[in-house]
Length: 130
Image (cartoon, rainbow, N blue to C red; front, side, top):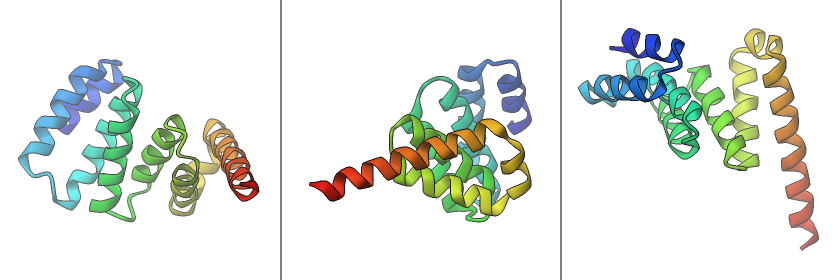
């Protein structure tokens, strides 16, 4: 099922991918091997603009497999869209720690991390003023 879902993602058929990933997760939602499926569904939700669900699935991937780098990437991207700057920054930093080669070679990701860091710093400075 994961392979079928991945095929739908590659074809930008994200609604169909979510349905297939749901079926795959329903088979056994709490095993470590489900982490990549939650991550993939998070990507599909993200591309559908369903950022809270994307964030939730990124968190579930991390919960099931804490060393799974892409879970942090998904959580960071969704958190950025939800303007959860601190959580997003923490997730991006963990992704960079777990998968430094891929992280540093992705210029969009580096840009996003820097933007989130700036927004987080501004938010913290504003909170200190109040």
